[in-house]
Image (cartoon, rainbow, N blue to C red):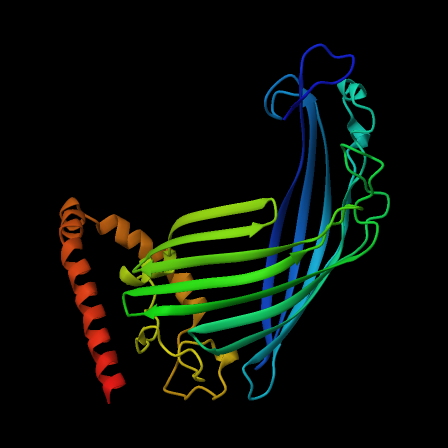
Length: 340
């Protein structure tokens, strides 16, 4: 934002930000053990000038690389998962190519410290309807760091611990439509000396219909509120509808407000299942499916006609009615089962 700097007549736009890009890979090393690794690339940009935005102002930059490692282990014949991860710290210092105009704000190009992090967690997944977890994040100290606005206040002079607790429940489970609710809490320790920590409450909901996703969320604490609304498209569901990739195995719909306390392997990945999957012949090879995707997309686009597009649009009302009827049938079956 704009600041008035002593000795400079016009307000100056001051900006400092870090972008981080991550590339990760996970490997299932054993039936209940998965390992992960991540390459991180961080880019710092700092600028001072009369323009609103970094592109028109003199700027300085620096880059750094980091790594991350993690593992996830499921206890034998249990629905409990234990996870751990570590991310390396990084230091970004743009002082090597500072423009002359930066002299107007002494000390602006101090190093930016990104602390290392260690996380431990336990998760509970009894079935595809319920997920819960507790995790503890430790952020290492950043000695020498201070607020830009007040260098007398240290930031991160000691390591901090940040506990997280969360739960997600599928309250509406139908073949065409799904509804989820989320709730959680976490303690945000202040890394600024003489500032108190604050407890956050998070709530959210998500609705899925066919290939469309709709979501809302809120994160609130003392003197803090953050709201989120989202609309998304599931590309894998779209490719299923277009017969570009195989459809996922059908799952028995559980209806409205299903019991989340039973144990079931249905709909869970193989690594979460207690029972070894039955060998019903050759399964789906993900690599083979992936290799065929570009060719199938090309054929679909090449053979698409305006008439087919118009027919698809005209069929939307019928598809919606069929989905509603399917929801009604599931609710009737659920009501009969409850009465029995």
